[in-house]
Length: 301
Length: 319
Image (cartoon, rainbow over all chains, first blue to last red; front, side):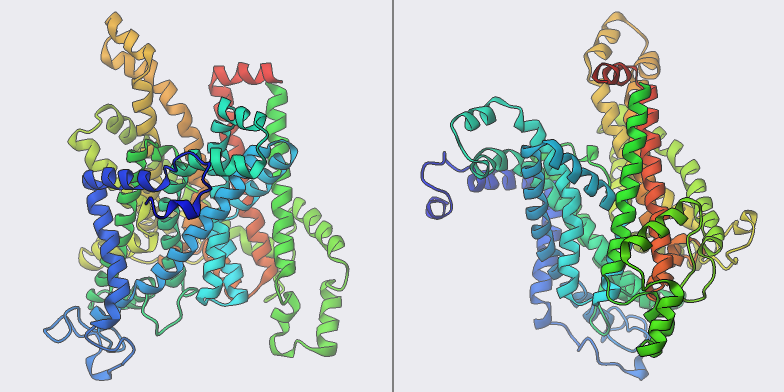
């Protein structure tokens, strides 16, 4: 840590608590059962997504009309789907797109939403009031409508999905960051910083960001899980990943019609997707407890 | 008090106005319009110009916005681009069906959620709390289409107890949707309950730790009286807002559920309209949904204000 910080933070800043704090928080998270299980699930899924192309048993798009909807066997551990493709292969590969898109979009959402929230929380006044009305207006439209309109117009490649998710999921972050900033902004050390003649950006960087960071971390973990939910729902509805790319949401949509005689096609992706989302949420829960933030008070937006 | 209520109502109206502007602007900025969707491949040259004249699309955007918003205020949502039918008529039945789904889910879900939230809050960290708290996390985080698919697999495919999809037509009377509506209601109520339960639980825990509860305990007030007459009124107040937020969430979540169960509601109509690029219908549904959202939140705010004497006087002082 000590060899990293001099480049990142100017020398006069008091000892940065970001990195050393992160290690303590991580230890705290891992010491809770929910955190240990959750983080293991998340790490497992990320590793799987990174390495699975190296060892999947079959090609994910090779169809075989002789092997349609075959039950699990020694050659196909999870059976085959309606086009004769190996289900295990597709389950192993099915989270890569989702993790890539949400993994890139979540940090972007938290950073831009967090920055806007802190800035407007600090500035306050008329601009703040107007901005919050616009935020409210955006939040009053269901996510699915906003996303679908953009996707139908611009296509559903990752170059559209990442900015779209990052934009819309940053908006609720503005609200959270603004509320957290309001709790801090009235405190004495902010007035002291102002009296010292520090600029707005310096106050944000040195006084506000460290104080709001905890909230933003928990918020980020939650946003990640909502984004995964949105991404896989879009795939399920046929607006996300385009076939033949394997994706859990898409696989469930395809296999649903054959559920009565070939339930294995549904169960594989259901278990994979659920375990990832549960993992993220257990981690977020443990993180919130470790940082002393009450997650249940957060609005389900 | 009255001034505060008025202020809230005006703010709500302002939000709806901003939303309508965002919707109109958003649709305006998208490439293509009602005419390119209607004419499809013939959308070029003279045909396109004639059609735009017919629809009045050749006039400036601001004029059309005010005309659209003004008509919407009077209940006229315009014509759909694909069938050239009145949107208000198309939306009517679908709206009724979505409201039916929401109403049944709410009337089952809200009382259950409050009951379980109080129980888990009072018996914190006991087995029953751990069970329901874990179940709530599962219910609220697993995508609706996943839990719906699993429930169809269990109750409809394996056990054969309930129908897995809805085959009743959109215009059928409400009574004909039973028992097909039960599984969608189950999924919807489950997710909704999870949010409310967690909120009520944490609020009960917070209130029970308060000084006045300790005071009452020390004075020897019986436990059940403390719970019912001191703790619950304070703990349930924040629940009003969560119920409102949950209803607002329902409006989005219900889309996926309607598609999964083939339920003929507003959500599925929206998906169809977006796929067909029927922009006037998309605009209309977006406006309806946003107005419902704002209306529900407004109602919750007013209810909270009326129910909470502290907030009432506070607001009076602030003017």
